[in-house]
Image (cartoon, rainbow, N blue to C red):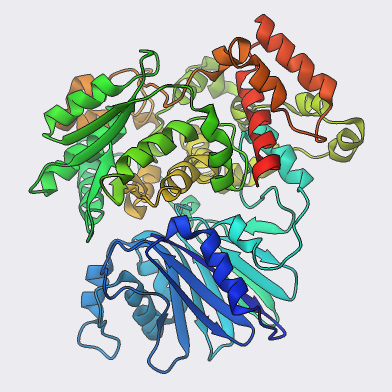
Length: 584
C-alpha cells in the first residue's frame, strides 16, 4: 500500500524536482516508510511507500535493466507469487520478492495486456521510453484511487487530489455539475470530482498518455458477466465458499503484522472465521464500542472473537466524533455526507497501533443485497409490474438524497437557472443499460457496485486507513467473487425477506446462526438527534458559504429542530460540503 504521483508534459517541459517531491510529501501518510522518484525531461513517476511486502527489496520505482520501462504502484498484487513462479527461469525472472517487480517483468514480457493476469487492488503508472508513453491503470472495482488532471499540455496524476494540487496547476474552481450530483448521491460520483478538470480514472480502465493526447480503454467489465440459471443452492454454496476461502488465503500474504476489523456482523465475522482456518496463531481483531446500545455492536464482535479464538482489542469511545469531521474531509479531498467515516477513522487508528494491514468485509452488502434498502424496495409487490424505465427511475429515486426540486429550492436563483436542465439520473442510466440482461435485483446491485461502492464505501477504508498508514484488504472484492456474484440470480440474494439469503446459508455453519442472521446495524453515530439539541448551533454554524440560499438552509435547520421533518441526511451533506470548503 502506497501513494503514487507524477506527470507527463507533452512538450517536454519539466517540473522542478522539489515540486515533484512535494507532491509525494503531501500524501506521506499513505507511505511514510520511503519515497522514490524517477524523473526525466518532461515527466516523473513517484511513490510514497508503506512497506508491506519484501521490506528490503521493494523500493520503488522499479526500472528495467535497459532503463526504458519504469513502474510505480499503489496497492497489492495478491497472486504475485504465482505470477513470479510463471516468470521464473525466463528472461524476465524476478530478482526480488516484491509484487511491484512482478508488474515490471510482466510488462516487459506481455506489454500492457498483463493487467488481466492481476488479482489485487492497485493503481499503477508505467512509463515506456520506447513508446514515449505513460500508462495509468486502475483495479477492477476501484479499491485504490487514481486521479488525473489534463490541461492539454501536462497530465498530472496522483492517489489523492491534494497531491495533484501541489504540481503547480492553478487551484481549480468548484465543478457545479459535480455539486449537483453530490446532492443526489451524498458523495460525488466518479468520474466527477468537485474540482473542475480533476477526474477519476474509472475502475477497470487504463489510460495511455502520449504527446498526441490520452486514450482511455476498459480492460475489465463486470457488466459482461452473464447470469447462470438451473444450478442448485448447494452448488452455489460450494462455489461461494471455495472462492471466498481462497480470496482470504491470498490476502494473508504479508511481511508485517496484520489483523482484521471485527464488528460481529456477517461480513467481518465470516472473514475472521476464514482467516482463523489459515493461520497458526490467533487473528488480531479490532472494534470500537459505544455506550448507546442502538449503535454498539461490541457484544457481537466479542462473540465472534471468542468463537474463533481471536486476540481481540475493543476500545469504548464517545460517540460524539464531530471534531474529526474536518480532518476526515481533508483526507478524502471531497465531501461525504456519510458520518460513518468518523468511527472508521477511530477503529483504523486503534488497529494501526498494533498492525499495518487489516482485512475487512467491504463489498459483501453490494454484491449480495445486504442492505435494508434492498429488502424494502423489492418487497413492494408493484416492482414486478413496472416497465424497465419505471423500475430504473424509482430505484434511482429511492437512493437519492435531494430530489431535483429539492436542489432547485436550495440553490441561489442564478445557480438554479444554470442547473435546471441537469438530471442526475443521467449518471445512473448507462449502468442500468449495461446490465439490461440481468434481473432487476442484480441491476440494482450493479448500480450500487459502480456508484455507492467505488464512490463512497471504498473511499472510507482507503482514506481513513491511509490517514493512519493502515492498509485495508477486501476479500469480497476478489474479481472471482465479483464475477461469481453476478452469475448468481438475484432471487438467491433476496428471498422471502431475507437479505444475503444464500450467502448467509453458506456461512452459517462457520459463524453460527446468531451471527449469520442477526439484525444488521449501521456503523454510525446519532447525529440527527444531536442536530436538534446539543449540536444545533454546530449545525447552523457549519452550513456552506455562498453556494446555497441562506434562508433555504435556515428553514431546513428549523424544520429539523422542531421535529416537523427529519432532515438528518441532508444536513450532514451540507455540513460535509462546508468542511470541504474550509479544509480542502
